[in-house]
Image (cartoon, rainbow, N blue to C red; front, side, top):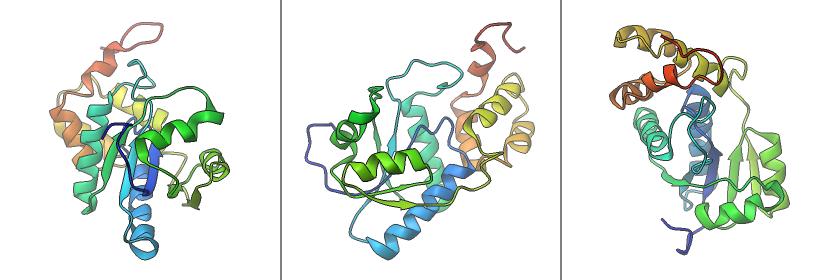
Length: 195
C-alpha cells in the first residue's frame, strides 16, 4: 500500500517491533479481541515505525525483517492483520497527519503507550489503552541486548531456550532463518564487537 492510495479507517497498532516480543504479542492479541468485540467491520492494521532509520543497535532489523517477524507472531497467535510501514519524520506535532498517509484516516488507535495515546487523541482518533504486560523484562532494549549476547551462538536450541521467555518461538525461529541475530555481534557502538 502506498501513501497515495485511499486507505479505509482501521484499528491501528503502532510500534517499532525491534524485535517483535511477547509484550507486542500481548498488545496485538488484546487489540484483536477489542476489534472483534467493538469494531468487527474495521481491519486490524499494524504500523511498523522507523522504516527509514539506519541499522544500529537500537534499530538492527529493517522493515521487511520486522514484517516477517510480525507475520510469524500472528500465525502463532492465530489471527491475521494488515501490515504497513511508516518512515519517521522526527516531528511529533506533525506525526499523526504524516502517519495517516500510511495507516489510514482517524479510526481507533490501540496502544499501551500514554504519549502515543495523547498524540493520537489530539489528532481526532479514538484511543483504547491496553495494560502493559511485564514492562520490566519486555523492554525492547533488554531483549536486543540478550539477543546480542546470543549473536555468536550457533546452537539453535540454546537461542530458543534463552530468548523464549521474552519472545515467541515462531519469531525466534523466523529470526534464525533470516540469520538476524549474528549481525548484532558486529554492531558495536564503541568498544569491541562481541565474539
